[in-house]
Length: 140
Length: 140
Length: 89
Length: 89
Image (cartoon, rainbow over all chains, first blue to last red; front, side):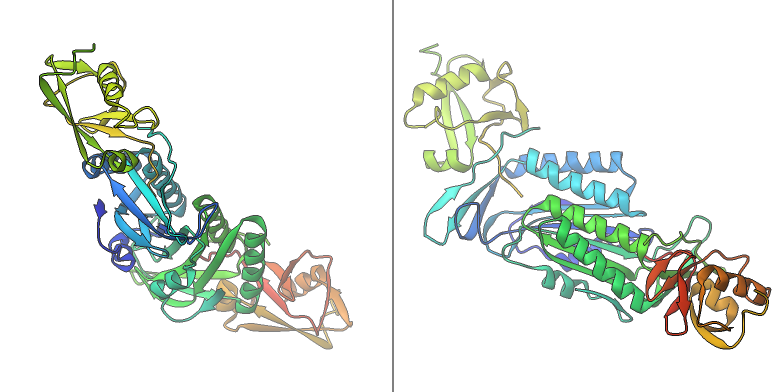
């Protein structure tokens, strides 16, 4: 299951969907809006995506993950829109028979979302300023 | 937060406790009773622990994790008693500013619980047989 | 090159800081051939500057949702997007 | 050594497959000195076999919740446990 969504990410529902009686391990990553960046206090982040392209790339990442690791389920969800501090922006969850695969696939998933998905963020500071986060050139 | 418990592990409560507005990443591992081992179908697992010693070792692991990684919160909980297929036997959760630390600390946590905590399990098979799982010599 | 920016029209999707500077999420670039290379397209965009701030902000092209190098040729039937540095997660 | 297993008593905690074979979670071992080494204790346990199955099942000692090698000496005030191979998680 992969997608871009606009609503709150329901962690428990995702944990439920990751469940699989043949799996002994679930690894679950959540990215959360932090209350600060390297310089200032942050109030929230606005996320914007090239949604159709993100869908394509998430599909590719999903295929790679199933090809490279013996896992049972893979979920990757990125939220867009305005998120306040403490809200979840991205989730990657993996279930597998053994934990090594789940850790590796989960870590690969989030690394590649960050490197390859056309998503941008603009931080809203407590000072009232807002600024696009200096990103990295897409590496797809 | 570290402990041995006898009741169902409440994932959502733990995710809530891992939340920290200065953290941008949460990594969460759950170990789940699988429906099979290498030979047979499994119905459930009975877990037994030398509880006081597990407490001591979990404390050590917690200290090591905070010493070795810049993380905000660390939770490790192991359940004991009889668990059916699909139930969670162990949870390790970490929150940190950046994801690398959270992945590493979480993985270290579960690896060390498995290597160092005096916990034993006996599988109950669908066939009616039950057997102590061949373990590894404790490496504390 | 100067008069290559006429006639047919490429519709470009723009995102993030570029979208904000352009105050629009699309950009229409007229061309006078059936197709032009992304390199030529980039030059067209630069000519439209300073309005576009294209010289300040780094970006690459995605054509039909795939990142392409600037030798690739595009026509009005392609889905073209300008991808500034990304920062998801 | 044969008559070293008398008098004072060490109480051992046992777990897992050992607990099951012994049908008890503690084991009392009388000793006739104030303290004995874990190596000596192991020999006492072996003498109590076959009842204990100590020769079949691998284990190490934890003394006061710390795994110890067999040179360590223990007395009745120590918390001693037999730790068969572990399988948590």
